[in-house]
View 1: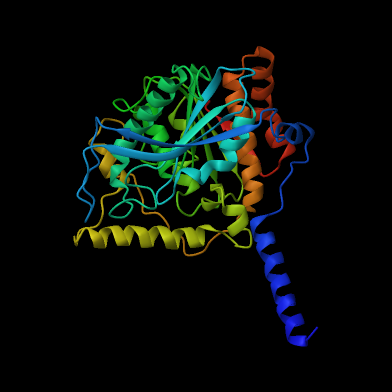
View 2: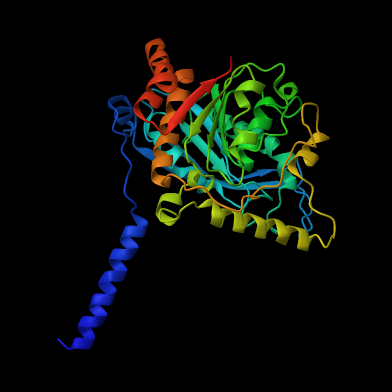
Length: 388
């Protein structure tokens, strides 16, 4: 074989190995006996189904060069058990973050489906990364209604003979989960005086902006709220958003990921960002570029309205003056490995949902004990604190 061919083959071999390493990051398997057991995939094979939904009762507003439309359209996916052993199952609706898309929480939703959950996620019309006219945050006021619409569609399919979801969903066990702007969407659809959907009986916000939500916002609610925040989050800072949750809401509690980042929550983080000191450094660059692009497209010299300003007119309990600008850090704290963050997130979410939805009293008690006691005992980079 000629030397040049050997060199080419060697380079190709290195590229193949490199691609494999990037695409297959190492797994983080918790060492504690309980954590190790609960982190195992469930007994169900998981089915996936793409969906395209249209809500003809509500419009999509104009967005820069996009002139708007009379309906709201949603592309997404359903994750569900391939069998009906144990059906009907709880329903989980996932809300993605700004400039993201419905696959963002795949590692969570696939895991839950293997344990007997039906999960669904869709692209929001104007905040997803491919939104017509460019992604904007101003459509946040319509996203709680989008979640309710998706719930309607899933429950309708549950009642439809011959449908893949026929008899699969328990309408009394519905939870909402979201990340970042999707976390705020979850907070709104679960607790907002005007926007909340009473069918949601448990809520999980991962790094959702909440510094402008006052105790008054949560008044009159009793469903449990789990907030998951990372102390190295540079986009939705932990001290202002995560830490106050147990003080604001009597049935709210906080899962703290020591050195957890914001970008570390997303599905692709372990493959793409595992060599970063803190993936939020790149996340902040992308976020600020997106916000500047949205402002430029609006052809206005005025700064874009803050989330708190958009929401303060929607009802009481929102302090328009309390919000701060994201990504103000000049130095980025070293973050935990994204694969480690994923394992802790999955353990927290799964144990929380099982403590609420398991049909077994013993299992609900066991998972509650694990979440509030054993999780942090077996993993020194996570703590759980509740309202007092």
